[in-house]
Amino acid sequence: MVAAKKGTAGDPAPRGPSAGTAAPAVPGDLAVRSGEDPWTEEEAVRARDELTSEADRLRGEILASEEALTGLMRDSGDGAGDDQADTGTKNVTREHEMALASNAREMLYQTERALARLEAGTYGLCETCGNPIGKARMQVFPRATLCVDCKQKQERRF
Ligand SMILES: [Zn+2]
Image (cartoon, rainbow, N blue to C red; front, side, top):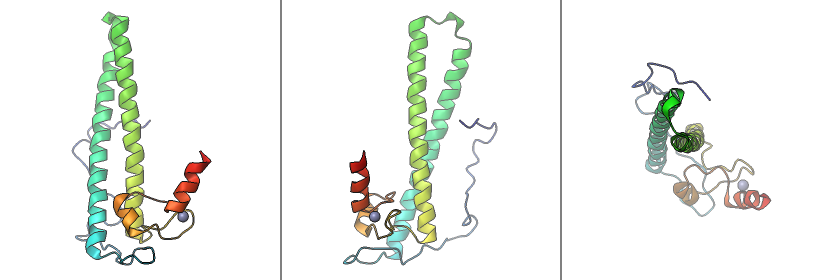
């Protein structure tokens, strides 16, 4: 758990090597499966824009969760007057908020990795076998890191 820094609100500084560049290049030669049309620059840009706005949304969600948690922690500090039922409710809320935040963090991590792969030109390549995941699949699951075959193998292991 990272302690929230004070006074950083309202400073969503852009990160990454592309910060400051007006229009970061999107590789136009992303992987496709045989029989699929190549990615057009427009499609690659759209995928990047969707991932970028998803990342922004998730950052906002995490921030809101952290603020809610900070409030809940503060409330629990002076809970001398609380009856037990109230304390129980607060614990449930806190666990719920923590679950939300950790889920959003995981999604954000995956989204940022997808963006990094998009910039590196490895977007759409299976991380296990290295084969193209397929444009159609990437457009439905923009954060996908495995091709259908590897995904199914992974799921069978559980
Ligand atoms: Zn694979």
